[in-house]
Length: 173
Image 1 (tube, rainbow, N blue to C red):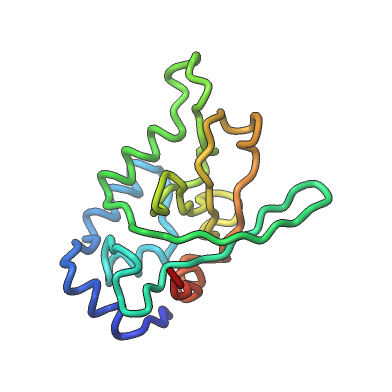
Image 2 (image 1 turned 90 degrees about the vertical axis):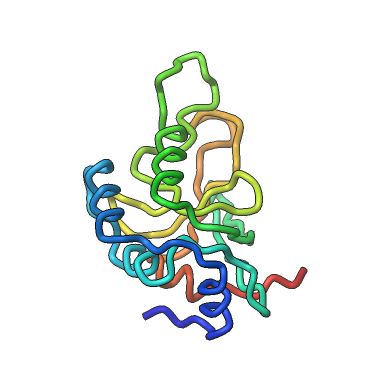
């Protein structure tokens, strides 16, 4: 169950962002060849493709953990907005593309992760689609191909989309 302050919901309603229709979800699942995690579907079907941080508390801060050999690093960032279905698929196709072998920046992420939201820059909130579907990860923008240089790890955020949303904290800025 999503535990959202009334002010956050009111802000989203006032923004008038579209909600996901059953047809939107069916189209995404068809294009991806897999079912979307239920908490994500519930959220976008109820609240839509929202912008975060517009409520009085500016709830948008999330924590993530990057495990590196011999080191565990806790960090935080700010989620800004959710991608509508068309933008989501455009970004996903771009980030996993291997169409241009000379492009040293792609693929940016593994195919099993779906970018559903963005931070203030080009970092992405990802939903895991395979393995343990539904877990939420963070990909801080990188300029190198996935698996090379510093683009080798994702930051773990939450076990599911509900925990991600419920865990958002006020942005002190």
